[in-house]
Length: 114
Image (cartoon, rainbow, N blue to C red; front, side, top):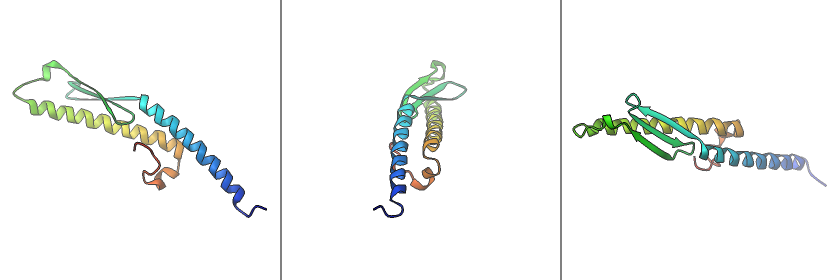
């Protein structure tokens, strides 16, 4: 004889399993996504994955000035940080579509790689 709430528990477990499968799918999609950002009018370009891994840096040869390495370093940092920001935003949107209102209550727990 089942007490009250046990049927609901089974449904909840099915929903959790479905959400886990959907999250795994999103994780795979994010690993394949490339996000690009640039700085210095396109002089420096950074490409990161949807999992916030730096994949590529491209630097236009004309901006390489041995007398002003600091400017080049600043452009690289700006491009990488913007690409990472965009990648994180994309990941949050994709995961929020799966987790819905749960995402805010998890505080980052249960979101592998984030």
